[in-house]
Image (cartoon, rainbow, N blue to C red):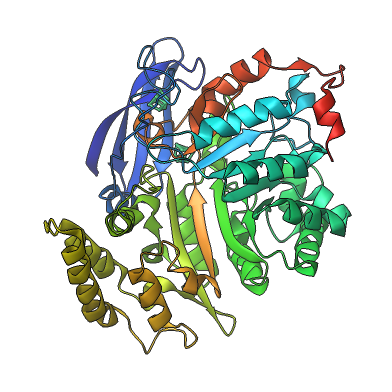
Length: 504
Ligand code: SF4
Ligand code: SF4
């Protein structure tokens, strides 16, 4: 049975040219189909559960792009990045590759120095410029940055780079790491924390040896456990576990990964599953076997956690837009909005009550809550102060009706939550954070499932050496090799940059 059908623009996975594609609903799955004149037809799974996809699709939101775009519409999306004047979302998280050197040789990785045969490593001056390009975005500056690679801890001057970003005004600083260097030296994480590091975004593929052997080429599990231990020792409690999710490799471990996070919730704040995106062309059999989508993950979690979390607990990332609009009006200024495409990311909060998992959706009527906020946002009242009073009284009156106190974990302080919320504190829900974990997923795209409407709304952007800001999925599918080759040195020549060698 075929229901929904939509025309989109995609890429040919072979030549990376932009081609027409269709996504259509078939047997409660969303399938993408396309034909390249030169390389033939391609079919892939776009989203594993059409019901969830259709529920999420209503959250699609067109944000305003940048007031100061770096490029303009010329060759067409995604070749005009960027960000170009056609892009629909400013940067929520900026990514900067500080090196392509790595101390791991993952069979699935195509980006490390040894595999590419060149070293890509921006100087301090270049990094400063790239940070500046992010924080200079208008109307909303990007204030969250992730240093990535390669392996960012390969740079001895990483603490200096983190300190520099903090001094420039970044309020959330992440490193994306395999954890090897943090596991080796318990003092290292203390040095990074002291420099201003906020979050460790830790590669974490499972809780058994098997997925590490397949994905990383060796058993990296002891390293991950040591990282958790070292973070705990110094009270560093902002670790995000990042499993690369691959069908047939670690899809049987997703429930155990969540249980591991719950057990270590004094250190772990989030699990962010990343279904594998393919680099280059793969054979059809592998594509079918390894392709896994966000809705597949939701069903697997339901099955493996015996219904403690299920698809209905998940919401699309842009479902939060009404809340952002509410805070914008309350604070009378533009704020960062998670306006990516609904098919890009999803999440739920789980609350830990005596080691039991209770998703927030089981005791708060989230749909009615968002509807209430939308009603308040739609109030045409011109006087902001009058609107504020009306909004407050509505919230005080209506919110208690949306909470099922019999199911609510006892330690939640609803009064503190309501007060913070009404004060316009965007982190009001932090009262849940103390004993909760965010379970999220972001499905990065590849040549097979690429969708230009998604990338045009992307909120995760690389800041690059040629002064561009490039959406993550378009950078990895198209622009990475071109940019890196332009600014790299042959592998056998050591960096001659004095600044890089001098900083500790
Ligand atoms: S992905 Fe965004 S920045 Fe890149 S070409 Fe498309 S609209 Fe422009
Ligand atoms: S990085 Fe890719 S998956 Fe994530 S928001 Fe951007 S386009 Fe969507």
